[in-house]
Length: 320
Ligand SMILES: [Mn+2]
Image 1 (cartoon, rainbow, N blue to C red):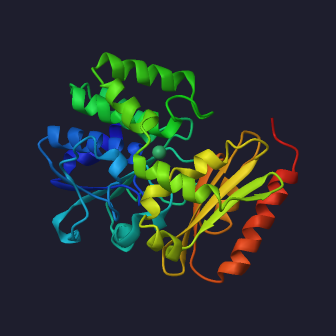
Image 2: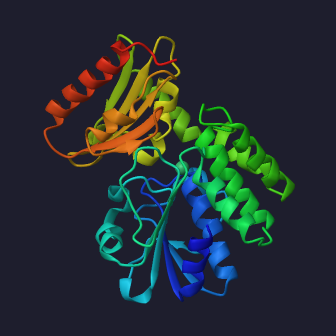
């Protein structure tokens, strides 16, 4: 932490990066580290090669943009919550080629390193907890807005302390953020409780397309289907979490055709089954219970391979 702070203080213009398909943890981490950097009187901009999903727009993020990034404007690049270089999207090459980079993350299976510093704590349920530690370390005064955003990060990555990545330290971080004035009703309502009407209508359509294959449950959503019913990948990002909770399901995945012949796969498993190594098999990554990957070619072959790997994992004796 000392090294990260000193690297930040030595710089004049910092660019912070989050991952594609940004979640609450990504936005919470970006907002809080940007707040810290700004507080040192250093210029900071943040970049995500994706849109902010509507479900997260109940908060305002002033410094996050998707506009063209000019490498020459910055002397330090930092990623937060990014497990895989692929998730940097169009910023990937610039980040990998730059000399002064810091990586801060909490994923177990990951393939991104910082050249100046890499801070990975896979015991943390969210990256927001790491950034919160960093803020506490500098003894900076945390605003209610930043406490709320960090709390959102914790809540989104743990499904409000429900997932098995939750530890007593997660609860302590949550309690401290509450003490700092985090608006927990606002976060809990928007992240956990509220179901957008559109999401509800789309779920009704998708429910008829689910494939039940033993203890594997999945769905393939073609681009044409989404176009016909007027929805996009962003509208159904959460659907896989419902699939994995269907009775007798051990592993679930959704395959969404996000562009023509580009398929985004989200994998989930119940405790005892690990989908992260299945994702790494395809160049993806994530956590044992939640991982992601992309299929860009040979769709049929890769789908068969994915189904086979999931069934192999299900056939193993559960590890708990
Ligand atoms: Mn995260």
